[in-house]
Image (cartoon, rainbow, N blue to C red; front, side):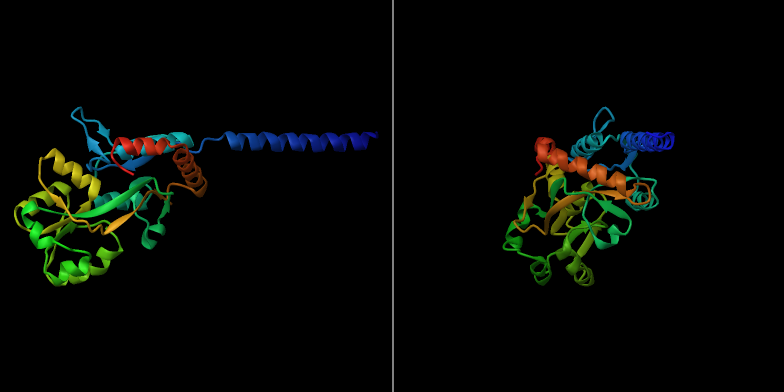
Length: 265
């Protein structure tokens, strides 16, 4: 073999070795170079403060497991007003908002994971209102029968509610609450006949406060809850890795075990 051929071969081998080294370094690079920040709020059983001052709940356990599988860690951001929290998410100061419903508007600023639990929105009332609320099947029944409704001042409660929301407001049948505990007080004070709320959260709050409620059969929303990740602070590669980790834990049954401990599907 001539010197020139030997030199060319050695050069190609050196180039291949260099490429392999760079590829190995890329594969070994961590998905997340810093902890990912998630906003929290008091919303049992998803998120709540213990007597010792620690945030716990289903969402923390689920998200922490998913991020750990992806090679990332979780940092909890202290509770903030919802509008400020969403603004910080859009600007990338917060990376993750949990238990989100996917909408076209939100997809402009966020990546959405695969579903990680099933959320349900239900209608609740005081037991003494049961006869007035029989056979409600949709929001048209609520409007036509002049039944007053209390809903959260912001958030997504399904297409059916969004379609009837303007009409209910125009008819003077809609009031709002900011915190779930306020909704119970509004019911007690007669500010409305029905409360529209997350089913698991309201069930747990009513149980904790020994507040008797009835729950209507009609469910305005039952669907997928997803992680919402900020496009400003999370790149597509990171999102794909986190979503793949979620799918792997779902397939293995690990997420189901966490959900079952908290009474979720």
